[in-house]
Image (cartoon, rainbow, N blue to C red; front, side, top):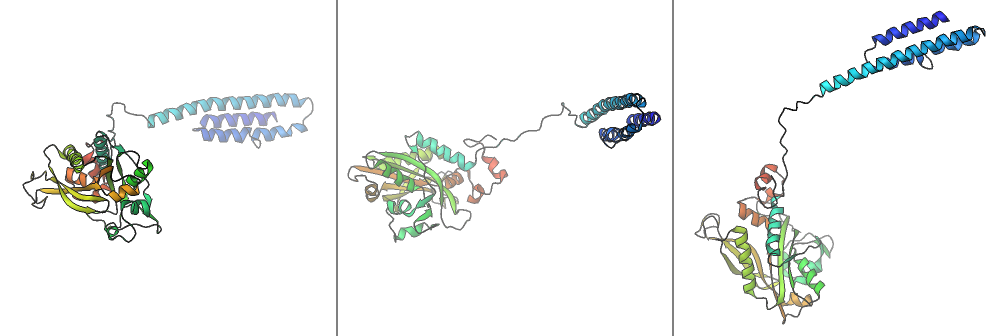
Length: 349
């Protein structure tokens, strides 16, 4: 048995010396020192030895185990170091190479336009209000002087969810909700930006979902001249101090009188060109004096309170301001298009 142990030791040490990776070294350990290993198999036969032989053979077996274990540990350290050096060599970085530029994102053009308009009106004392996009028929139509069956409802082809629930067709319901909240006891000066929805065929100038910003100012002695002054300041801030505005008679169920506002064409400075269809003017928004019935339904005394309201589309404003000819560009998320306008307010690229 002594000769067997010495042979096992010599064989194991030779294989350990020849091992080239940690997995091979682990296999050698299992082969010789495992539960079914060569050394274990020999030691199981010690029961057949005499009492005098057992201590001698046991001592030799321990020395053989310690020798094999020690060589495995030493070899393991060598192989681990070699593996680490190989990994470091493969993953070496050339710190002298120039860094890769990181492209920063920026605010979407529509977001920038909305924020610019908000800042402008906040500077004039307006507050920003928001409301639900899923609205009731009452707030979207009836509270704005559009009772059921009113022909003007056809102007806004609506996405109905139920007979009484719908996707709002404008942000005016926020105005109605705010006035009802105040119960006719105080003035209102607000704008309400947000998404609106209409059953429309998408093309270069129309979309089934778009953005709208509506404004409302209700108080004692509010006049049409206040509306004109407010919109004139807005136009000059958005399009330049040389822009002129004009108000044309129009019709909206919730305002009386109602007007459409045009701005002088920035391409021809009002002289007439293909952009403005030779008129010198470009339509930009609608507004008017709040209809007395709308005030009364919200709890206001129409003999004491008057007000004006207006509504505009940030997409149209952006298209006019930056010469964009297709509204769909705002929603296709083409980075090549969007990155051109990161110089706008809020842009970082």
